[in-house]
Length: 26
Image 1 (cartoon, rainbow, N blue to C red):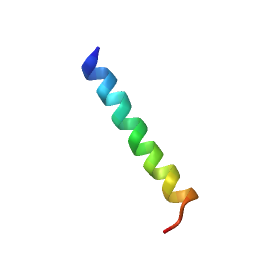
Image 2: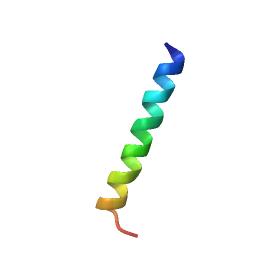
Image 3: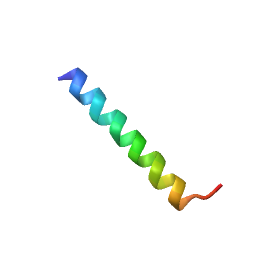
Image 4: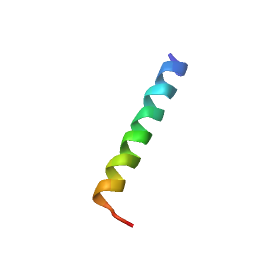
């Protein structure tokens, strides 16, 4: 359970980073 949960959180962080790149241009 812990390992799959960590993988899911990691994918969510990557997705959030991509969305932030699009919404918040630097």
